[in-house]
Figure 1 (cartoon, one colour):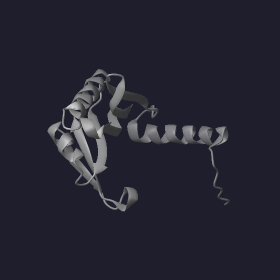
Figure 2 (tube, rainbow, N blue to C red; figure 1 turned 180 degrees about the vertical axis):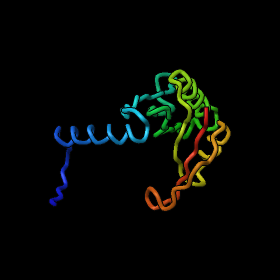
Figure 3 (cartoon, one colour; figure 1 turned 30 degrees about the horizontal axis):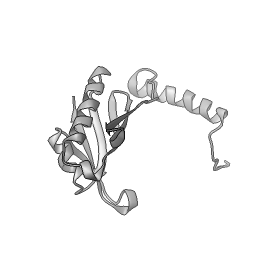
Figure 4 (tube, rainbow, N blue to C red; figure 1 turned 120 degrees about the vertical axis):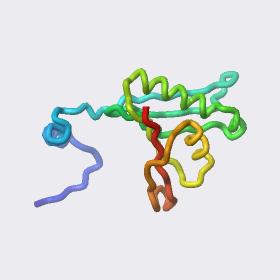
Length: 140
């Protein structure tokens, strides 16, 4: 056996993965599954200035929020909640069953997510930059 590290997957590698993942999906889901996410970005403006952003994707019925940031001078005004509500509207339009994200353990954002109705569903010890993180989910 020979093992190589490549900077980029070739067409041959992608073809191999598609074939093998289709077989694995058939075994686990009873059918081939489309793992390609639908990507979205939401932006809040005030007088043409960006004051908040939220990026997420939908994959197999799950909304995965990757980033949510409100400008430091605009926090505490309900902007984060408005963005999350917009995500939930989009999630329902796409018939998803769950909204999911991770955040730093003990960070202020945890209060926002709990207020939004999310519950802690996991812990990621010694995660990014050796910090503890937590997973939150909201089931729709």
